[in-house]
Image (cartoon, rainbow, N blue to C red; front, side, top):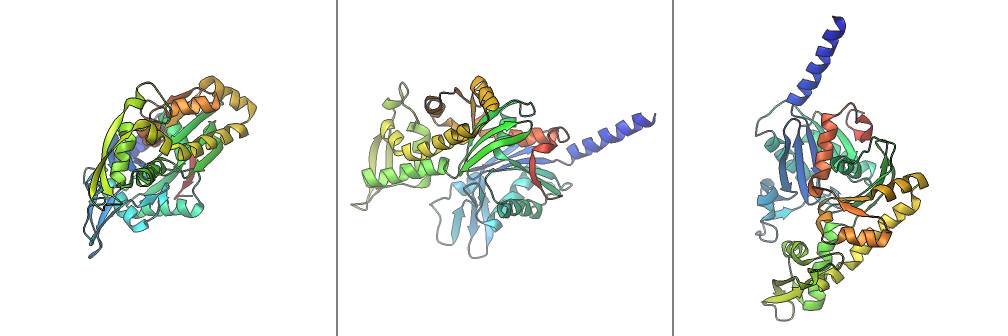
Length: 356
């Protein structure tokens, strides 16, 4: 009888945790995604905040704020509070987290949630504390940090709890995380601050240098999505696009036609940095785990995994079959959610917490 009562108490305890709306957060440079226990992914918004500089009040968040990028008057600044995967503007990041947490709760003020946040594996102790402090100030009860590659691997369905080597490449907006995982832990990892943003920047610089055309951040992102590729594949070279921007020589708006091969060439330098990070990690991998990786292949996650031909490029450069996760954009947040739902079984994956 006593054992039955104890079991009921334990069930009641975990049910209360579920009803307190605990949250998993992928606090990304480009996008923030939020997972709520028992509900799944409830929010996916660009990590952008628009601030009125006169009274220091937030005017818009997420997609509404992104629409303002490059289009605001002097008194309003629309910016991304995270750069290279870490908080660059603490106050704006805190406001953004508060807003997203409230929205994820449907606007209601509930019991302070437990929050699991995915962070780049290469961040410093100071940067970790900044993330935890921002989440606590935003209303969290407890904050737990998990390395993004581990969260992405869990979200992609890799068996990270088994004594088997898994390799994941998580390409976000600000960082690329390359990691070899086994038994809920990171055996090897490398974080390079070259990812989606740098690919967009390389396109911007190419348009300025070759076509004398100045384009904005959103236009570069559109070029990357519509016509770019990492490796020549059938049909890609026929892709073209008309780009509008400001002509440097005349100072007037102008339209230029571009083709996929030139955009692929413009991104070759940042792509080579990512490939070299993968090769360095493979070179340091213990033989038994390397054997597992050869058998299972490499998994690609993050928004950068959607770049056409990137899996083919990595396969060509490493000789190991590379797969794209079923839903690469949501891998990290799905991983944090999986950890929330299986808190006791996956408790060893955390790299830091506010309660320690």
